[in-house]
Length: 253
Image 1 (tube, rainbow, N blue to C red):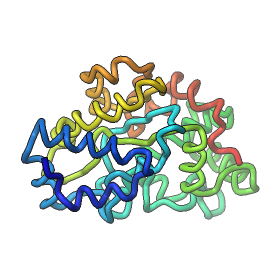
Image 2: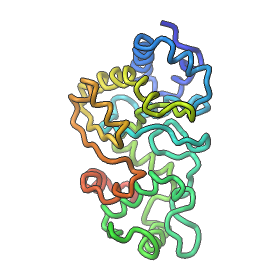
Image 3: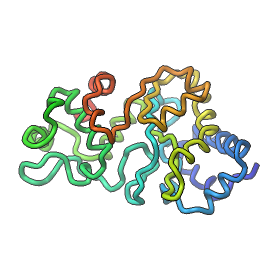
């Protein structure tokens, strides 16, 4: 089946090791729902700028973890094609005296709660007190040179640990329910997970939409952890997430 040209062009953002797999995944979508990709190509969706497959810049042979969120941020400047990497965020820490996290991080709820979870896991914050003076003290230490300073550095740290940062739906459209778009991408994910099966990466599923991937046999066969989506405050105190990410020391330089 013919894949629309704008969708194929977006494959250029992926690492070459992924291209044949992603093409097979798109063919699987087309076989299951022939009208989906042509309709998508003619529609307005996020991410823009051919970043649909940007998460696949991580080379296939370096994948050790597959982190799956729900979908792109619903803002053009934020949706990068990489799970919870908000394009509107540069600095992580507030530049204001007595400030904690930067304003853009605070606006990106999932990223904010992920940062706080990391600080709790590192012993810098108590999960019962993750704001105000306690968070400001973390910021002061970070800006003194003890921690990474930008979201780009965070993405590099995650990549260095072998993370593939995906969303259950690779697109966001305000007039389409995210669960509906995610369902359309299931054949694509089955293809991707089959390609990873021999490597047995650990799968981390964030939120109800991501958990729907467990319908796929290739996903069921992988070791995995499911958690609430980071936009929930309870994520900060999630012990499994703390145990997984804490030893990685993602905030440290």
